[in-house]
Length: 421
Ligand code: LLP
Image 1 (cartoon, helix red, strand yellow):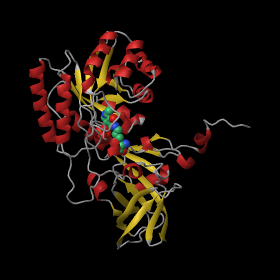
Image 2 (cartoon, rainbow, N blue to C red):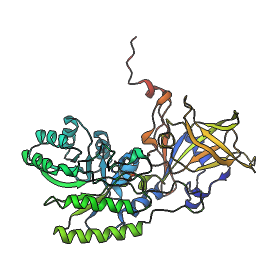
Image 3 (tube, rainbow, N blue to C red):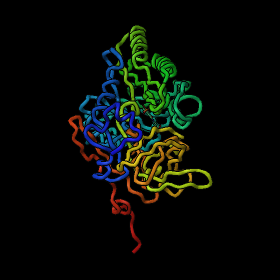
C-alpha cells in the first residue's frame, strides 16, 4: 500500500499495525475508524484542565454517542450530558449511574421530563415556560437551569448558542419571574449552566462567558454547581504547517484563578463542570471512503466518492473544512498535485466534501481518509437516498480492531415502514 498523503495519521500512529485499505476490505466502505488511545488521551486532557478539585467533565455525548465510546467515557470516570431520552437511555446502557448524567433539555414534552425524573436524572430547563411545566409534574424537586449570559462564540452562526440570536437559555432579565416560578412549585435550583457555542480556538470568549455565568450565579443562594459548557476547539487544518491548538494550559490556569476568586466571594466551594464534545472525540476518528469516479465537467475536475453528506454532513451544513489523506493499493505513483472537488454519491449538487482541494492526482479505487471525523460525524449521518449508515470500528489500545457499530442493512432501510399491501 502507498500512502500518498498521510502526515497526520503517521504522526499519531493512528492505524497502529493496520492499514486503511485492509480495514476497508474487511469492513466495507465508507467506514468510521476510531483510535482508542487518542480518545482516552483527549478525555484525560479535559480531566486535567484545572487543578481545582471540585471539578467534573461532562462528556457531551451528542458529538459521538456510539455505545463503545460512551463505555470508554464511563471507564475514564467522566460525567456525561444528554440532550434527549435517547441519549439518557444509551448512557444508562453504557453503565453511567444516573447521578453522573445531566439532561440539558430544550423544548421538551412533559413525558420527556418524566422520563428523566423516573430515571433519577437531573434536568436543566431552558425557559420559564418549561420550568413551570416541570414544577407541575415534579413539585418540590431539584432542577437546574440554562441561562443566556449574552456571550456567544462558534465556528458558524448555526452553532453559536448564546447572545442575541439564539433560541437557547433564559434571559437573566427574567430572573424575578424565574424565582417566582421556582417558589410556586417549591423547586430547588441546584445548578445553572450555559454553553456559548461550539469551537473556539482562543480562550477569551470562553472566559468572558464564564464571567457572565458567574455574575448570574451570584444572584442565587446555595447552588451546588455551575456548568460552563463546552466548545473547546480542535484544529481541522493540520496539513497546514503553522496550525495552532487550543492553549489548554493558559485556559486552565485562568479558570483556576476564577474558580478560587469565585469561591471566596460566594462563600462555598461549588462544583464547576465543563461539557466538551468535539475536543474529546473529533481527533480520534477518521472516515474512510473510496473514490469511484474521476471526471471533468465544464472545466472542473471531480473525484466521485461514497462519502456523501448522508455520511458526513459537516462540510455541507457549515462549510466545514476536514483535511484529507490519500491511500492507494497499487504502486502507481501520482507525482503531480492538482485542485479537485471531492463529492459524494447523493443526488444533490451541494453534496461536496471539499471544493478545489489540492491533492495528488487521484484515480479510481483510491481510499480517502477524512480526518477529525470522530465528532459530529456518524451521529449526524442519515439514510437519505436510502443509503446505509456506515459501520464503525475501534482500534483498541492493544492494536486489536473491533466492530462497534454494524453497517445498516437494506432491511434496516425499510423495516419501520408499513406496506399498504
Ligand atoms: N453543551 C451543550 C449544551 C451543547 O449544546 C453542546 C453542543 C456542547 C455542550 C458540546 O459542544 P462542543 O464541545 O462539542 O463544541 N454539529 C456541529 C456542532 C453542534 C454543537 C451543538 N452543541 C458541528 O458539527 O460543528
